[in-house]
Image (cartoon, rainbow, N blue to C red; front, side, top):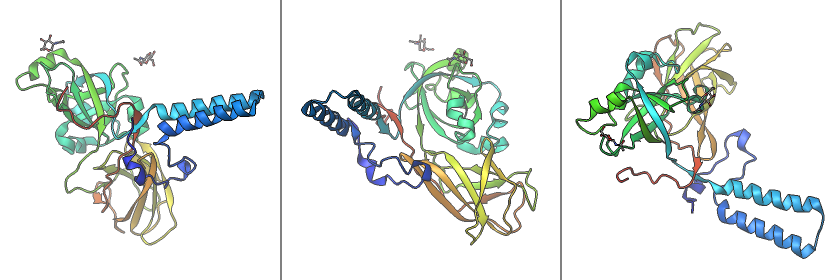
Amino acid sequence: MHKTNKQTKCKHTLAVFKCLPCWTPPLTSFSLYICLFTLIFLVLSQSHHPILHEMALFLCLFFFLISSSSACDRCVHQTKVAYFSKASALSSGACGYGSLAVGFTGGYLAAAVPSLYNNGAGCGACFQMRCKNTTLCAKQGTKVIVTDLNQNNHTDFVLSSRAFRAMANKGMEQDILKLGLVNVEYKRIPCEYKNQNLAVRVEETSKKPNYLAVKFLYQGGQTEIVAVDVAQVGSSDWSFMSRNYGAVWDTDRVPAGALQFRMVVTSGYDGKWIWAQNVLPVDWKVGVVYDSGVQINDIAKEGCSPCDDGSWNSR
Ligand SMILES: *[C@@H]1O[C@H](CO)[C@@H](O)[C@H](O)[C@H]1NC(C)=O
Ligand SMILES: *[C@@H]1O[C@H](CO)[C@@H](O)[C@H](O)[C@H]1NC(C)=O
């Protein structure tokens, strides 16, 4: 029914999630035992106590709910997508990537609805999508990266016209543009940056000695950055940073000297720390992109049934 193969990877590194059990995934069968056990117990004890009955019902329901959707690397979702006629509409997107966005995945960009944009945590997430008309569209679809927020909730995504056209079969590009709106299925996929680490760009609003704003670029894997701390290299006196907007994090308590970062990213069923030990030099400058020396390749799970099998070579 579900796969528990990734179970050994389950690590509770994020404090908030410490109380969640590591054995959440194999619950499908486990929940049956729990239900049976409680019911048998109730029958044997011939209890007529209403609280016990409620507890049994609650336990059964609880475990059933947890186990009714499997934890997957990928789920396939259905929506419609439209496109922006101007490429510039996306490169000035809400994530704040600016003109850098065009360099990501060759200009295959997307604006995502608030639930996927997730207050900016969804910035830089990668998706594969294909339209459902097999005459019109290629079966492997196209891969896009989120650089903007789509306020209009009629479609989960609005794509750059380049990405929208790329869904079409050869010779059908004009036909798909003419339609303007197509039914698609899509799934989250890991972002892959060949020979490219996670990078930190110092924003123009930064001002020594107190204020630092950075944005994260080239975030690999299938994760979201949910917390960032900064400290002087070699120090354990960490200051937390806050998400200012989009992919931009800031703090007005900047440690002196060269700076290291640590981030909490969603991973597996919870989260994990990523530590970039030496990122900004003592004389960090605004507008410069610094290599973090690390890359993220974790996969954050989502719940659905059945899971996507990873191949889109057949319909
Ligand atoms: C699929 O697209 C082709 C070409 O645009 C169109 O002629 C056809 O009617 C479409 N099929 C469906 C089921 O929408
Ligand atoms: C879109 O948002 C509006 C207002 O926020 C809401 O009334 C409507 O039901 C939403 N539509 C969809 C398809 O979610």
